[in-house]
Length: 136
Image (tube, rainbow, N blue to C red; front, side, top):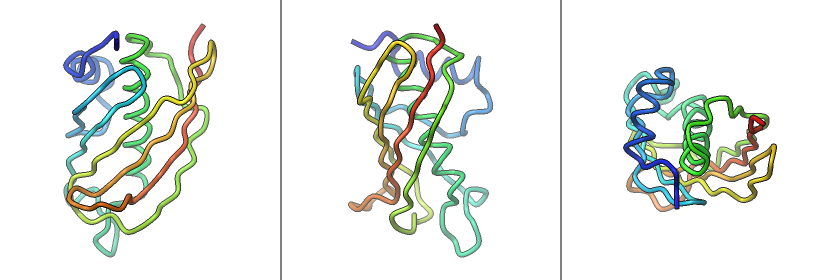
């Protein structure tokens, strides 16, 4: 069972990490999976009317961070050590939906993957692998 609930995670973001992407909501959480939604607007668009790469990367990073917090508790000093993202297709200007999976949780590293879709679309727009260093 997760140590923190989605409401706990939203509170943590408000109080401890106000730099997190705005309009970011946890829709589902268990020990190894998180589903999140990020609202988007014009400031998330790049020329050509598509959601920007940095917006997608921030969603991956924040979503996996919250998955770890949900599993371990408020470990504020967990940090990204690697994030590799593949942009698969043009993300339409719409909410983004993401699902992250914790693949391995060790003493000092956590490894997972994260897939992102544009709301209303079946094909993913991006897939990432991510590694976090955990504080001792």
